[in-house]
Image (cartoon, rainbow over all chains, first blue to last red; front, side, top):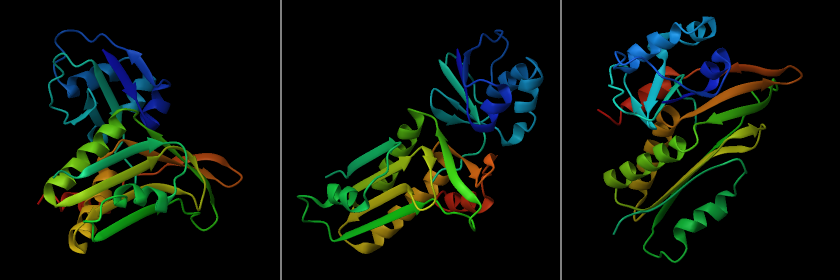
Length: 83
Length: 154
């Protein structure tokens, strides 16, 4: 699946997007964040404040307990500051 | 009849009067038109620009969702929203919301709802660029904005 990162999540990880292939036992957004955190120091820094992290599956806001199922795109970003 | 909905996410600036005219043109049933424009402020002279990042595709989709929800809550004739991204300097407009209705109450309420929703649900992020210092910090989400959006869910 495609992972997208925005704002300081993008800056800390050092890339805007990438293809990821999580193991099959990763079912929820929270589990995916924990798995990504283990990919390196940059990921650990990006996901350090997990409670404030927002996520979207196929461009819809979701909570951390949401099931990933066969989503094609997941995005991680800080709380939004538009308007 | 459903409300006419116009949503755009763009780099370029916009003209408030020209955008408002999109809603009123050929639509003489409209009795009230409310527009809100959010501008980039200089924060006492320290801010050189705001850099606005967005999630292409989802940004448009979220604003459209908000516009449709506004149209389901109030009898709107039309609603228009434009949100910019990229580097925006103090004095320039960032966001525009225009609502058109028969009477003023619904136009004010729907415009207020849309702005509260945009602030907390539309995927945009602002970074400060400071005068003489270049890129600075990311602006943090305000609890006050979150509370304003929550009140519509009550």
